[in-house]
Length: 329
Image (cartoon, rainbow, N blue to C red; front, top):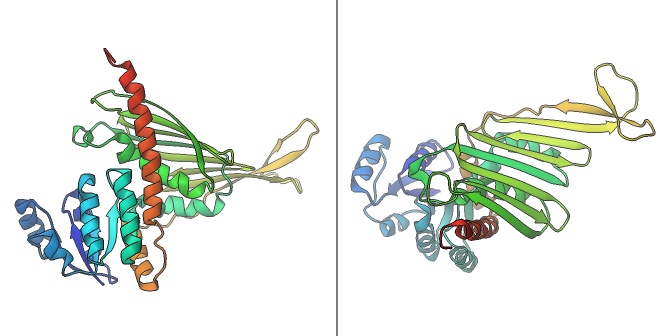
């Protein structure tokens, strides 16, 4: 299948490098509005540079959108109107209204759209997912050192949205309430944010995202009946701590009393095998298979829209709280 990339920034370069070596795709080229960047990338990757987005769209079957978020909507719209399948980086669009319109267009023109929520393909998450059943409490920490180049994008859309997508994927229930807090530390916008998301089935998720940290962290802890699941997205590690009814004495298993009647359960620690996979390559591979098999992508456009709606609710509530603390507010 012919594929072309829109955007040749840091992530666009990664996509070009990966796609070039995938048998599922025929990389026909890329477009970037910066002529200097285009010349450099074209030479570096030995790939064609298109003169415009329209000329690129006209010569491909699939458009891989790796441009700044503000341009996602217009790029995706033009691709869909030309009956092209679309892979679009997260967040799917800048506004919820834009995302909703893409939903309508994708259905009308009968094209596949996958959103680049790459953590769904993180091998630590895929190793943990079979053990996740009816979560009751979830805690996430996604922390990064401060980078002034990233402050043009909300920390919610840049970092927290990864965990929002993961949580909406594993909690099979509707959101009923969202409460937030945020602090503008080094920029004019919130640099550290916290959101508490409550679900109809009683599950509660507590998310923290920060770009004012001294170190990186990408951890999620999931608590459910008789089990605790720990996922380290950064280090690619997964641990499962589970409880089972004590059947016989075993010196190598820890037992704990679970009530005042002396009943005990056995504690088991399991570390599932985490495959060494490239998550970006895996998501692009899955999109190719969805097109070939005419099946739903693993991360649908609707998934991307749901995550964006929750993220915008978080941002609106945080901004409201911050505005109340400003002088003369």
